[in-house]
Image 1 (cartoon, rainbow, N blue to C red):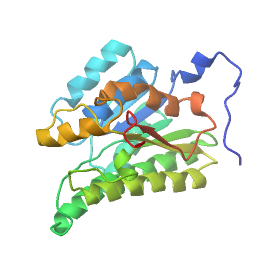
Image 2 (image 1 turned 180 degrees about the vertical axis):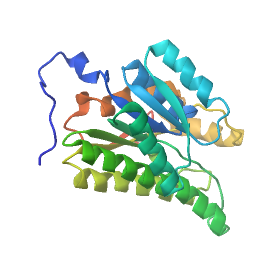
Image 3 (image 1 turned 180 degrees about the horizontal axis):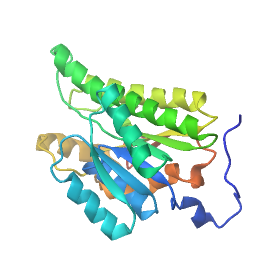
Image 4 (image 1 turned 90 degrees about the vertical axis):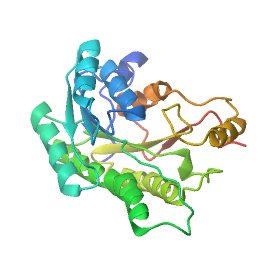
Length: 265
């Protein structure tokens, strides 16, 4: 079957961005980019399942955003590294909300090691969260999308500009490799899933988050970004709503790079 099209593409353009009546789930949704994605989807009208691993404030965060936006938001503790666990969580979301329209695989971790010094544990931890976790999340959501029928789903991966280039001065070959794999995974699923879902990526550049990384690193990064600053996580909200909504109905297999021009020079 062909990729689904909106009921009426000629309606007012702003209506294409509405997520009213949709149900979304976001992994890594309690902080950073994931938190802003939860907020964005809720502001656009979707009910949202906020999936987290270790946040102590996830329940309160969900309650606060729900009050601010007037939609239903529920927090679910899970572990994307474990296929059975994240599958149960996605199925629980579907049971609680009645369906699933949007899934954002956002959970990720980073570490910095000389490539000659990686331990098995250090390498596997990155891959289990960033790549395996993305796959198991997508697989669970994809089965729901397929069961629901043609055009049922929008799958969105949070990748990174690290999928496209090698960041310096930090050494993070495992992280870079995991994010490159996520981008190609998304492209592969986009081809396989045209009957029932669209699949896209967002690759952010440097984000303003609480960080304990060396100041000399960030000082160097600033000199390499044409925009001259880092990105506030909230500046990504529109991109996620776009990919989740009918505004991107003919877009699948794409990787949206949002990096202040960092990958251009």
